[in-house]
Length: 413
Image (cartoon, rainbow, N blue to C red):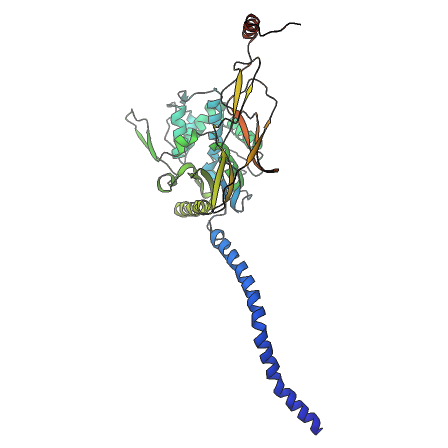
């Protein structure tokens, strides 16, 4: 028993030494683990600091690079929400398409019906029977978010607002959007009228293909009825076009159901961003958080333009057409998006053509330009023609054939 007590005493005296040995040897391993964890935490912290606090007050939002369609930030991007007057972006697309197709012109007179003049909310105070041009109506829609001008244009283009809304929903389906249904052309609150941040971004991207829109959306102030006693001062509801560098559009929105919304776009150093913010509590927060979202995009990303809109990438001969050859150009800029600091590089590209069927006009897709890094496809963009090309009439075809015969270009066997 005495020996056991001695042994126990010695063992108890040695316990602190074992503990000290563990304490001496353990820290290096813990430090190594901490270093790895710290690096991960720093990376995560950096990411969180740059994105987790963005649009904190919004119900949903998204940041997209316009030419590539790449999403740089998202928050509840597919949630179905009221979007107020951002609805009017689809109305603007239909108006611009009608202009480009030659169905209407900017100088066409548009008479406001009693229905159009009765619209509440944002308006340019159209009187029933009052006539403004298409251009003036578009200015009212784009700058003042005018409900009366929107309905007047809807009736002018489609006969009734109901038929125009049907066309709006058809355009939405054409764009492949799954979370958008419109019940009216203005965005006034109505059950079953909704969209999402992602769908709104795609709609904004489509609207921006019609560059004319920026001539309206970028203006901060202008006048309607300037040559009358009822001169009307227009001030853009989108304050970013005045206070944010590069901002030139696109559409604000506010109703009780939607709260404060904004589809903003800005361009710097060849890169155009689209920011969508939905469900903010007030306009001040909406504007500041949208600017922070755009700042994040411009501070973090860069774009390398491979081919610009207007660049001729290929010419090809045509037979039996009003032009002997057509020139192909990108419908919009084709670029490669990367984080800032990454060195740009050289890319190759292939051209993939559709079957050419006349007539074709500017904006019609006739093929794709496929950008490659070696054998890897990086991105692609649609191609169009630089001018309208029509098939030759029978008379013109006969004259061209006769000319070839006289010139000796026809060989008979």
